[in-house]
Each structure stands twice: as structure tokens, then as C-alpha cells.
Image: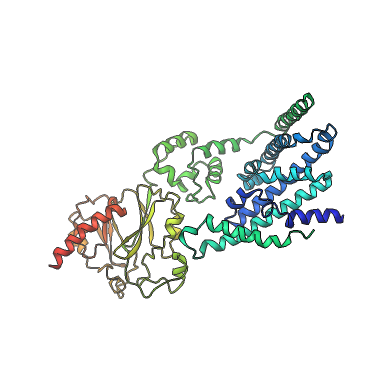
Length: 191
Length: 294
């Protein structure tokens, strides 16, 4: 239990996907203009991460390891994650149209999100069991959502602040992200 | 090698079959969704929200339920574009009278240079308006920070800086009449006018007779009724309550007599409202002013 908790915290805060692994930066800058959008993107990513790492860790532990073809994990993970997102989208579309409309554009966007593949590869590299993989994916998803919400909160304030014309928009967002990463560096090496 | 290839093929096959099975097992897409998607493909997809629905897809959903909605909540962008209108008419199987719904936005202010003080706060109109109703003398003066330009999905609004005053100007060629700027302007200066309007009156000052707008703005309407008197077509109706001219589009033949007559340059031909045209127009006006001063 303690071990799982530490995996969760490490993935959520210390080895945060965005701030310390630099994965999933496109949604970090693309969808972080409004808090509401950031929350729905974060929830969608967490959901997909959860499903994807469940499937990939099953494949890793029961197919790749016994046949000792772990080196193929990137190719197989891409295949599996892409079809998983398709399936999830299909199911949501046919069963709950309102949820589909709410997630709408974000689901297809996530297919190409490197954080999802990243968490599957990290799980494989660390040699996590299935339960550990799920917990680490949830941690990574929560960390991703947290960063997105923090960033969008700051950017909403930045919108109305009086910053130099050439710095408006993305440039100031990059600087903000850098300062944010510096602040989160304080957590590094804690566990 | 063979093992790797076979594992990869197997996983691919399993994924493909899984998608196939799920596609078959789940209930098929409801009819309305198909219809909605078809309608949505004929909408502009700008998600401007002018129709009153949150985005084009929501509008398509509402249209799929009730196609007569197009008359009460028209999509201003489709109404401007004949091709889009035609294809939408085909999909909905309905005839649409576009000319009645075609609207353009006009910023009803010529730009008032007189201020009550320097403003150096947050540079948006909304923020400036919160502080004593704006830094301009006239409470109905364009503040010129361009809140409207920022919300315009067509980039149809630019800020026209002539003679030290900033005034937003809508380009009617680009404007689709979505009305986002109308909601955005804190001073309520932007009006939607029919696209076939000929002459517009560029002042929003709610004239009450005891405080004429010339007291707030040296370019304000004098309520002199010169335009009204100059019109030979009876196209100008004098609104006695507000003491401003109103126009009858059917009677107006664009002779330009009222524009010439206005001593404060408050009237402008609608087709010449863009900043580039106005620059020319101002040159003419300046000439006139010089001649007048002599």
C-alpha cells in the first residue's frame, strides 16, 4: 500500500509528466487558456492513460516478457493505444452522446498525446506490475490535470495583465512554464 | 524475427477485430445524429455563437430537431454566403429568405478626442469603462482599446487612429453580422443594421434635449436638423424624442446632400465606412473644412 502511494505521489508531483519529463507539452500550451477546458482535457487524458496503461501493462507482462521481445514495446504500444482510443470514442459516442459532446475534440487529440505513450513506456521501464502501472497512470493523469489547471489559472490572469506587446500570448506562457518548472524542482529527489 | 512479426500481426488483428465487434454490438448511431452531422458539415464551423447556441454543432443539433429554427435563430454567416445558403437549403429542404436576415455591425461613434484625464490602467475597454464610465468626456464615446476587435472571429474590426482619437471601425465586407462585438462593447456603441443600409448616423449619444451631445463632445450632434432639411427625398425622419435623424432606406437615393449638410460630419455613406475609405473621405472633409474656415 505504502509502495503504491509513493508511486502515485512520485508520478503526480515529483516526476510530473509535464514539468520534469516534458511530455504532453502540446496540450499544456494549447488547451491551457481556460480553466474549464483544462479540467475536461485533464480528465480525458487521465481516463485514457488509465485504460491505456492497463492494456499495455497486461500486454507487457503476459506477452512481451514471456517471449522476451520487450524491445518491440514502442511499436506495439502505439498500435494498442491508437485502437483503444478509437474503441473508447466509439463506446462513448454510441452510449452517451452528451459525454461525447463534452469530450468532443479532446478524445482524438489524446491519441497523439505523447504523455499517454510516455506513461506506458515508463511503466515498462520501471518494471511495474499491473496494479502498480494503473496507480502510476492515475498519478500521472492527476499530475497532468494539476499542471494544466495551475497553468490555465495563471494564463487567465496573464490575459488581462499589462505585459510588453511582443511577449503577449505564447512567449509569456513559456516563461511562466519555466518558472513553474523551477518551483516544482523543489520536489525533486524527495522520494 | 518470425515471433516478433507474428506477435505484432496478432495484436493488430485482435485490435481490428475488437473494433469491428464493438462497432457491430453497440446500437447504431441514432438518425438524428447522422442528420446533425450532415447539417453541421454545411455550417461555417466558426463557433461564433451568434445564432444563440453554443457552437455550430449545437446549432446543427437544434436544427435537426426543428428546421424552422433557421428563421428565428438565423446563422448570420450562412446568410451572407450564397453557396453555403444554397447547400444548407438543400439539406434542410426549406426555402430561406436571406436578405431579411442579413445584418452588419456598425460602431456608432466617430471617435471623440476629448478626455477627462489620462488613463493608464488595464488596457481593455471593459476595464476602462468600469472606472467612471470611461476616460472620454462623452459616456458614449469609443474607448478604442479594441475589445470588439479581439472577439471578432472574422478580424473585421480595426482601430482607426486619426487625429489622435481611436475609434473601432467594422469592415462591412468582412462582417458577418454575428453580433459578438455588440455584446462585447461596454458602451453599447455597436449596432446591427440591415446590410442594405445606405446612410448611417455615427453617434450613440442618447440625446436628451437638455444635455445635447455637443456639450460632451465637440464633434457631437448639434441637433440642428440640417440633414433633415437638406433631404429632398423625405428619406430622413426626425426622431423628436432623441433629436436624431433616422433613415428610410427605400426612399434614400444616396444623393449625399445630408452628408454634405452635416456640420459635424456625423453622417457617412455605409459603403464608405471602412477606415481606408474614411481616410479618403476625411481628406475631402478636411478640404471642405479649410475652405469653410477661410
